[in-house]
Length: 307
Image (cartoon, rainbow, N blue to C red):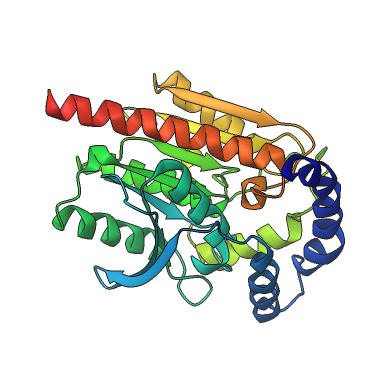
């Protein structure tokens, strides 16, 4: 029954995004309304049953943890998207809950501070504080991975470069869903049939987040950063996205640096389609593939540590 539902839900969601969500994500629409509208819209991305959500603070940063029944050792550190100006851990419960179920591990979603109230590098600082706080609690870096979508994908990659540059412990791998990695917006896919993201919205959001910092700053636009000695990457993106080239350029730069990369491209979908897992078959399959990759990384990290 779910496969039948997924068949007809895909075009329904596409049209809903085009007519109900995308019009709000344009220059001139008040940010307060955008935040309210996205919070309301994301309620349809409901989490699976059997997952418990708990709020706490790690290193004084608020987080929401999706906890499966009898969780396995290790954790997924999740960075939500929203162009650095919208969304939260709560809006992404659908995807964090499904990742918790599929991996059998806690998924820790960081409620990093948003721009324009808190511009760069506030979000990066919050993630680094949570990471160090987890290490101080005894969590093992080889048993944790970063997962991020859109702006959260860029944040995850930039943070890993920041850690590497300071000889700090790195996560076992990075999963990036439709990552936004170039805030200069010099390489947009203008042939895209993107039903969600608009150029005017991400340009406004980039200005709010950067607040005068050059767009090519490495940790803010990690596609311009150094990719040497990074952990393996899994990147998932739709070919219909305005930000398609952000994913492709990251994959190309990482491979040139000798980093293990798996770039998975999908047709006929939209920006961060993984949020619609449970309703869209391709989204469910993509999340399952990500969970399998995470399991491989954590298993390899544990074996290396035990050895």
